[in-house]
Image (cartoon, rainbow, N blue to C red; front, side, top):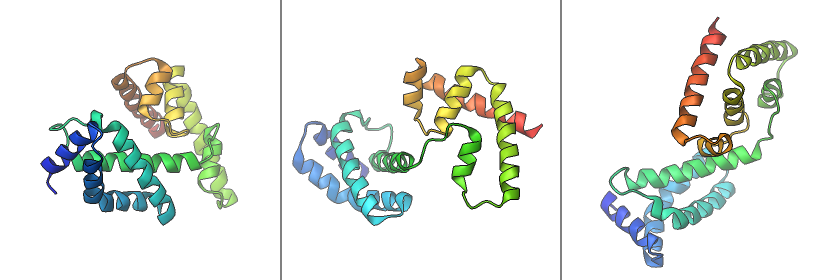
Length: 179
């Protein structure tokens, strides 16, 4: 099925056309399932995620902008993002950098644990060089797994501002860690 065919089907889904939805499912489910399976690494979880992906497609079809992005890329992004959200929901939330390292690799040797804690303290020291709102955004994005949209809402800033905050903060952290 061509990109134009998929765009047409997504347009019909905006109008709640069930036949178009069934046709879109038939045309895209194998690829979207492969994406979910590759990320989740469990067939049952991937099947469940795929169902939720199609619910999102049904509800969000009106957000698709034909011509801006290939329709299969848009569908794949929904599947990828949802699968990542499933993984993030499984992970326990770490309250500080040291805990995050401990969660990441529970089978560390004592020497590795000492090195990781030392690195965690270095990261904490570098985080203190950031303004409190930027540091909070970085922690919540990269430790808690919040999305850019969620962070922008929490901090009351536009989405692109949040992207800029995170990009600049990571550059500052990289610079600090290289000293």
